[in-house]
Image (cartoon, rainbow, N blue to C red):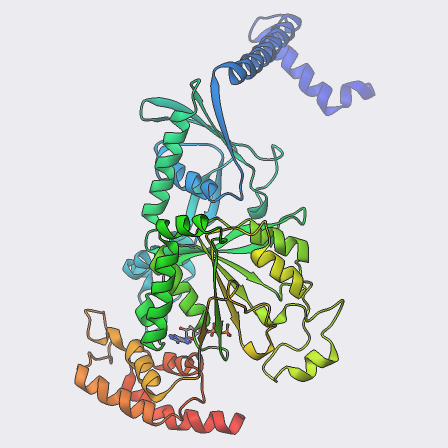
Length: 490
Ligand SMILES: Nc1ncnc2c1ncn2[C@@H]1O[C@H](COP(=O)(O)OP(=O)(O)OP(=O)(O)O)[C@@H](O)[C@H]1O
């Protein structure tokens, strides 16, 4: 037998030719020619289709592109997911595990969430079952919106590329119309839907480099907004800032600023020791006014000054910009902090500062020409005494809220807020009891009395109380030994 006859390919060809001749009674050469003609026809039809499509795109199709970094992108994907996408089966989808808080309800109802004989619950299977989401990915979907057919295209950068979270391809929406209004109407609906589903939650955006090292805003989390009543702070301070922001955001105020030629910006400084509620208040404020939070940190080692400035100018007109560790600005003049900075800083401050944002860079970002108008700037710091006067002058910081380590009254409030759900219709595990309000007040007074005033942060005390969720009596029994332990550690 020749070498040719032995090769596996030639053996398959030979078998097929035999099959065609003997079983189908068709000349194999004719069969191959017919196949080639069919493939040619399909290819020509496809190219004709492409030519026709690009002609239609230029003459009678309205097209809207949406970049991945635009908040509209998430709204469209969510709408497609919840409406058009659900009604059909698609062959190419993006499977994603999600942390949506509404899944927690499913978790509670799930029979798998029941504890084993030792009272312990394994969450492995429960999570695998409940947190899977299928999203539109790669390809086109034709759907109908208010009697108009629309084409949703989600194109990957290369046909076989695996989707990267930070390299989402842009979206394209098209419809057969000479006007953009059908797509505009659709986008209005998509945004209204986005607002409806996120009405009681806020989205936190953080900066993130993508695969090409291009820094952009990326939504880091969407979570239920914190109720302002759960933030323990002097009522007068709370009311002052809420009223001020309320007035600032009012459309009349914007007009007033424009009429007087004053840049429409407002800044707040929250200062105080770590764990006293600065971030909690910022997040609660965002919840009260229905705004998203854009977080920037001067200690982010990956960000250059020009990137910092660009990110600052790329926030939307109405949002909260949370600028953390603002005392670090300018500390790194070409490397590590200067010796003067190091000696001035207290033990609690970050001494080896690695920031590339100078003080003038920060000032420019805050109120330079490209700085966004209409945003609320909240700066936080643990060491207000180190801030340059230029940074905190009116116009940059309009209200300064000082947070302190808690008083007896605030410690009592924290205790009551941790155990506030003991009277509601909460489900109780065996051994837990509903609490009488008068008794709980008594315990709160006792608990606060065991703690020295203005010594431990609310975050520290909260950390202790979380060991005794729904067991206030036990928390009271153990607080003295906790204080002793803390004193010993110091
Ligand atoms: N005033 C407060 N009211 C309610 N909770 C508080 C308060 N202070 C601290 N906590 C609790 O402590 C934790 C940390 O608080 P938060 O992050 O707001 O502190 P912070 O002042 O921003 O701290 P840092 O300066 O370290 O950023 C949160 O879980 C919060 O619930």
